[in-house]
Image (cartoon, rainbow, N blue to C red; front, side, top):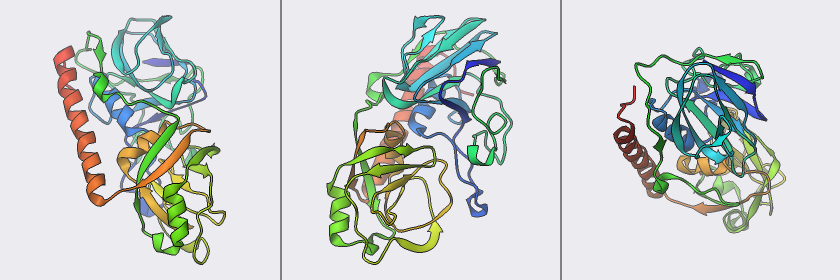
Length: 320
């Protein structure tokens, strides 16, 4: 088991997300940064969809009464094992009665703590993810609190060797993020100047950002005849432009429908970059094609496959 000594600022249990229920109004939820999430599970010796702890801005402190194997990926929260610094993007053994502690993020925004065996909270609608607005899933449908005790899934054997992700797979979190975006489905509801503004100007991540969406500050994008449309489907990555003209990028907990015109959609492979952006970071949008989006996804999946093969060679344990 895993005990929460200090939960940090905003720590929840998440997995890949809750699929198949959007027609009934249920958001996907799940991790904000799927890349760090999947790499953390690979380094921990798990499959790619075991539940993890997602920490935001400042991490917590976690105790392990029994020996465990864990990994950390994502923002650099200066992790320590029993007071000794451990490397980010790595998996390592935790001795019985050990403690893994995190501090404020030095770069990036979200860190993932994976445990070999996964966090064994009950599944709800096929997922262990926490959806805070509905108080559903995760651990009692809420953020973690000091004193919480989380069960860990059973495994036949724990890895023993240090498992570090090769540098070529480790992203760098900069203060400026370039997001590739496919225009549409309502880009025709914006003026030509509005589309040029959207693609040509720099925006700033505002303090109004959370797991539901990122509100950006910057130049207004002009509509032809107002922002409102008949509500239609929304997905993570969709970029709504409300009446004030500033973009809102939908993220993991976004609602299933929306009534503002959508100028484009950030490709899924770039959403992890946004998930690691903090208030004050800069954002630029770059138009891309279907082919560009498919290529980005192909490269991403290739990284997972290569990292998994290399991980298995290092620790000698195949994922469950």
